[in-house]
Image (tube, rainbow, N blue to C red; front, side, top):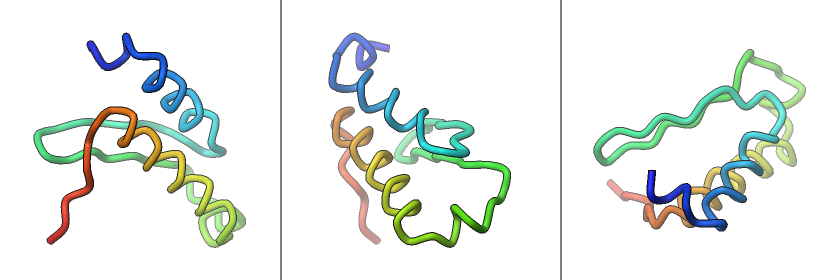
Length: 71
């Protein structure tokens, strides 16, 4: 909850929520799941739309101080 007190995190969350088809973000220990639904091939298979979605997801994680885990 303290993360939402930071403008950067709120801005990133709003940007993610505005991506077309965004459904949810859930957080568990060592895992964040972000979902877009329903399946829409015109977005899900479009490289530019996918780039926008992934960029918004990465921006949110960076704003929250969650580095990606490898392996």
